[in-house]
Length: 543
Image (cartoon, rainbow, N blue to C red; front, side):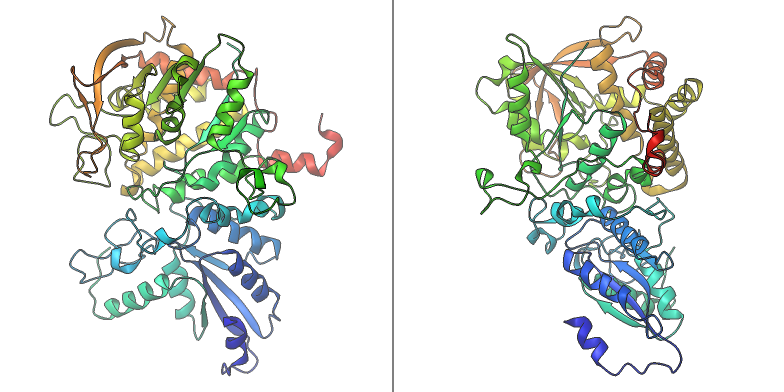
């Protein structure tokens, strides 16, 4: 309706030149139809020159920007500029809007970072029927759209304001806004401030459950499917967990934008035939069966129950958690479940030994001693630590002591180059570089540290790793107080006795990790999307 009214109006088109158009969109499904309509117009009359993304409504920026790139590639329009996000802020006293305000938050809640809550966006479901479905276009995006060369890359992606200002400065242009108007308002206000010069610069059964309460949004489940396909493990079941809004994680650089795109590398993975879909059935609460209910995305407890059914009598499950404990809390609430779980390895949490021994929740300055995985869902963490399951705790302190970008990359450079070695090295190299050059990426060590959990689980018995543990009674605080939620304390009277990793041989740890990735056994079946495209083009060469 908006488009038809605009094009029906008198636009004062300069004779002999097409009407220049800039589209600002929140990339909801109906907006994609509008984008396709604009791309089909006669370019001698109407010329779409830019697309900017509003990142505080129905989609998450990392998924939205790559979807727009793919549509433009499909239509042969890689010439169209695309802008999203930005790391600028608004000064606390409101006297100045800095360049490149990201638009991840409404202006009324915009501060100096991209972390925060959005009172309006809370009305949009995070999961089914909401952002999960829009980010994946109900599962159709991955099944249908081709994958072009353009993609999100950290610190190289043009911001929304860059594209808006560049296109507006080039001459008369029609701006069509079909999402929230945050980008336009920020740009208008910035221009006003600019005029005032007030600007500042053993063989194991494996299942994976994706938690949407951590550093990536729910639609990033498709990255898991692609990674498993790369490794020839389409047999591994993948479930999706419960949805909570996470306000402590930045929406922009160093946060969701990067995690959802795997720091720009997600699209280098081969394309898995499995993907998230919005298919459903009456059996699981839908109003009717959809066309292909067999493609329905499994939930947490379905994966868990399926895994239990495959166990031999007397067998038990070992669980590794690398994020918030939301899903695990649901599992341990099942009656007598502790008899089926051998051990739970919890990667995260922090026990301070002094006032200077602080946690890593950098986006909430008032909380000095919590670790992110515990802070993001403290009630779930409290439930797990009050359960009867055996817990091996791999805290932040030992992760920090054992982790080293330079040592890990050095070992990866020395071993055989399997596809998974090359891929891991590229990602870790980018994380190290981003940490060095930009203040928004100072927490990149967090992601390196979580590798330790997998290595200890598989090699904790090895004398070479020299893993040493201690027993302590630990209690987790979850009282709804932002400054203390997620904090862990030793409490001999009310705490739970857990096994805590206190030492590993760091050199051996890096060596074990690198050599495992370099082992040609169980190596990638399809090394990359480029390799996959070659096989599609030359099917006789698939052997």
